[in-house]
Length: 515
Image (tube, rainbow, N blue to C red; front, side, top):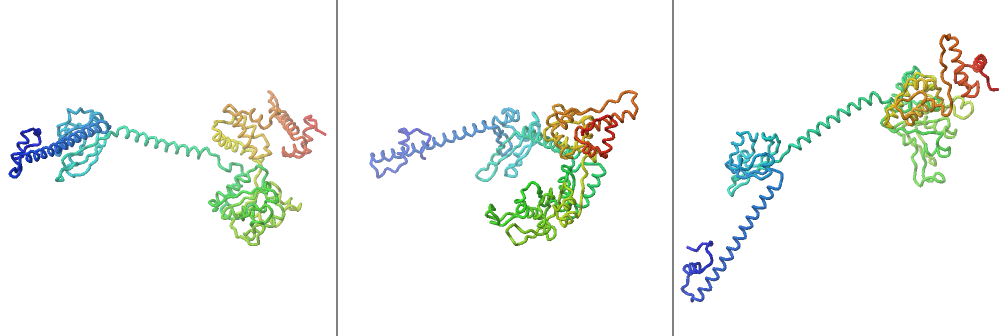
């Protein structure tokens, strides 16, 4: 029998090898050399074995250190279901000390209620990784357990390594996020509801004349008829144009607005109809698409149509008749599909008599006329409009302004020569300049008549007859109108009465007229 590797390499070891060697043909010196060689070989093998054992011990220490360093819990279970070892993280998560669990069977731990579920029995049975959520009864923590099988050389499960991760905080955060999302959705629904209630419609008015305009819009919007919108400056012609567009079958197509008074006459033709490269001095080196082509498939608003030069009126007439355009510098016509809406604050019939507007173009544009009454003729809508603009600019400037009854009364008494546009500008200014939330009568007067002292409505004395009160109020109104507008003719126009009536009433009230 050969000697064991555990013996020291001493003389007895040499003698042991000496007895097992074939020494018949060797001299004593040769036998000693051979034994030394064998001795050196055994030393080398022993050294390698010691190194492997040390490396194995180092790996074991490193794995154990890593297991204790991580926050996840690690538990090693034998194929018979007994807990072999756990790391520090396992104790921190479960609150169970190492001595209370190592060496015990998993089923016993379940019976005692330490856990609600174990994955190791299923890992051993299925021979594959198994995951499950469970709750630790001692502290109520919710954890994820992942069991991984380790096999022997025969393919049987030798051990199960379970990794436990504490998901309690993560689950709480998820619940908080879910609740926050639910609250956000509820707030959004409430906000949308508020917007539906408070957002001002694009076309406000309850006066009978405005209701009639709204009916006309609803009727013509479903057609492709050319519309001519007339009304004073600021009355809302563009608002009506957009209402027609938004309710038409072309609402998904382009909407192009052209202010014929804002574009120089020498550029208006090329802007509307485009041009080919080199058509005139200063033209681009490539073709330019005109606004009619841009609006193809949609709607074009020709605002201030009365300002269009006669030469261009002829080309526009062809567009309306033939539904085609010709670019500047070109001879080729281009078919277009555009709905035309025209708007003006001028009386086109008067323009025709003066030779400033083509009569045939007027009839082409006036297929479906819509006239907007001035704001002074629908005073019942002033409060509605003012409040709708107040909502708009409160939201824009993050304010919370309100009108007092006196402020609304003053806004209603004003004649609004600039119509709805002037009212919107005044409301915006009041929202900006007023420091208090309540907008008072004095604030409105200070903005409408800046730097002027506007006569207050006279106070009615006690025991005054109705006739005397009416006469006093009439005197104040006529006096104010004459002072503001400078002549009896303008005052009569604003007050809606004849000029001789103004003169007669002024003389009766003792008001001196300017000569």
